[in-house]
Image (cartoon, rainbow, N blue to C red; front, side, top):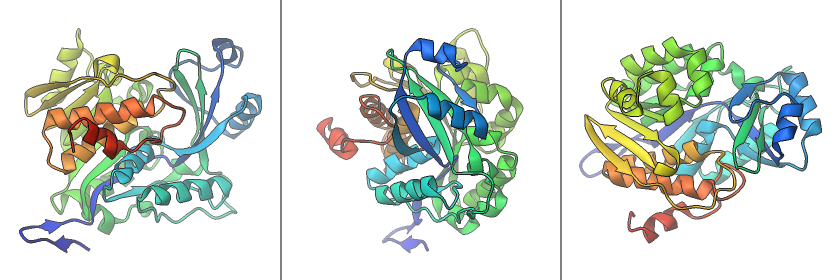
Length: 339
């Protein structure tokens, strides 16, 4: 239910995310472990149930933390006090319990019906192997999260969102396009806007035309890193790729690693500096950049402030294992004079 303020109607949610509901299993390893076990470094690979069990058995001591790209973003916004909800599918099993508890503990609404215990697919998980250079190699068993479809989209929830945030990895699901279309239509029917993250350059390669069509027809805000941008809009330089994207959406927010982020809104370019941080694990850096950026955006901040909030949130995440904030992001923003 929308709440009527003095001068306008405030929707129930500032941001609703849709993505793969996964539990991250994080472990350190060396480069030889990757090569010996056929893991390609620095990218996300989809794996099946047997491979998930095999790889899990070979990993060293691991930390299990609720994850999933869009879920990390929504958890970050919720931790900042934002009004959020998340849509992603889990099973009625132990990892499903962990995921649901963690999302709600962060302050996000999470009410997607769970798949029954009789379901053959389990709650999805992502084996995150972190090498000494802090690069992460993702091995993702989507499990039941892959089967998120239109029936899982609550149109009333989408209509109550200022923004929806779509996870590019979801394009690997067979019913994702239909689910996204239903969510977009409901959100835009009440004046809401739509953002998407490209997620991974190999994901872009797998679904290039689908991404192009969605961005052209429905997207208001595009999140990506420089590698994803180059895959999406090939060109001789990053600036040329960004220019192509900026012709199609209102806002482009492209992270460029240690250089920070480049933001273009209606043709106006802004560069936000990266936050100095000791790099421990880059898992979730893009997810939390999006969280900080969206937090600033829904609270009416200018593009530089949004970008700086994104970079600060990303800097916090890469300073420790796991893709959920350990420090108080709001306090970090206040210390920089941004709140």
